[in-house]
Length: 330
Length: 297
Image (cartoon, rainbow over all chains, first blue to last red; front, side, top):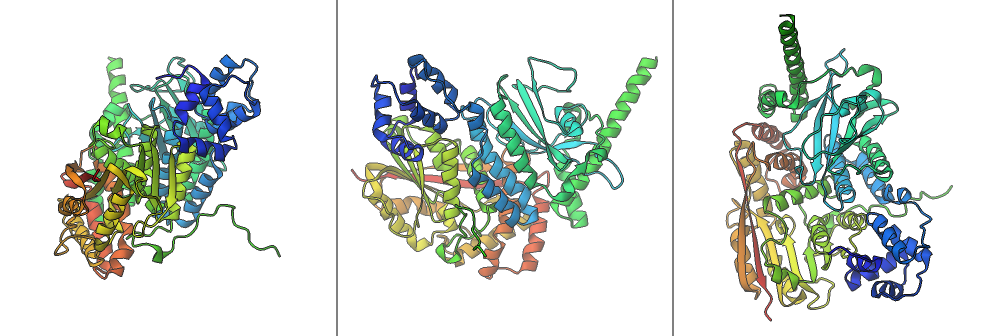
């Protein structure tokens, strides 16, 4: 049941004695004070202590402030929401740095991205409204060529999106939001309700807003972090700040060779997802064949298969365009 | 010169002699794998605590998760049921620190995590919990410890409280190399006395869980069985393939230590297994069972 007062909401947030004890200890709010707040004693609470309460619940912060102000119109928190919910705990940074320095290279990408997803997902979507987080990576080019496409490498999500990307490893190019962000090395946020001609976006079902942030070190780019939401107003300044921190952390998952100078990136336009599907269906089989025939690792086989498929998709697109222009000529 | 001052809360290294877990815990790769594995199992079995009626669950206020690892199951319970107080224990400080930080980040004030060795008496008073959960214990628990652990669960449960144990049988696949590799793992666990198999060909866990609970004095013992189809083209395939890719690497030191294979053989089998699981016709089925019973009133 939705809480009508901040006291009811607080009671729902800490329903058990052990939870109240923990909140009391971790945020230096007296247990007796907490009990009084929840039970509804009418005295005006200490506003400094209420600020501590807001610190404890960054996700419910706005609602708490609104409800507290209904009872105490004079309450105006000094610390702004952006300063709180964009924070990532120092212990988490330490943990990722430790994986960066201690985990062997072939396992590092998987380890770091999984840990970061585990941290991001429940915090960014605490109310299970639906988000998808995808790491889009530059397709390694053949020697002497520029980066011509990106691919969806790993991802996770909450309903209505699947929990994992599974076999959806689409190629993206200049026609996509990810492509725009990688090509400009600038983050972008777009809303389905506010179409813009400047940024190319293809909206998928359920997607009401999307953000993409480049994954870069010193101007060299590996790809981007792509986040979609079912909520049009999802990407508040606080969420954008958090994504900025996560995108910085995610760069540690990549090997130095995965980063490219901006001048070495010349993305082409890739075919529509529906036109890619028939080819991508063969991806696992072609990887398996390469591994068996050449005795190479899965990672290398996947990289070569992607390069071949990128070539095939670009040829397919060129053929379609030639056909269309021939039709037009008639 | 000032002495080296590490960060205020360093992640403490795991000591090998502290536990029997068969995979190295000195980095977060296993943490990461267990997180992904927990998601896979929860998805494959249709969710958490689905075996119990709403009435039964309403009576469970205090929940204990034994060998909770990085806390996935306990955190999920804490998030889904804010009225329940959830405690997770694990011998690994690294896992517990991760679970604690997750609980803090997610503001789950009803979840706590403690370092505790499940093979020793647990530091809780009698009848401290209404539900005790344990998932996939074969990775660290010697066969002979099961009766002791279940007796401890009974001590910790309130009258009528529920114990539930989930375990698995070794996966069946169409890949000859993967089957060979899985047999090596099974044999190594058997040699380490961590399976109930009479001959080391299977884990033998599923058949024993029910009788173990009954022997420990639990009543109304029931079970739910799950078959997770992880074949190519299924929704679980990619996650299971990823788990195999990581786990087969991480388990190698254990296989070598138990003397069931050589590094050369493992390298060759690994490459073949990874190739074969990419085949379009690859088939894989993972069998799991949850067995539960009640403490006598």
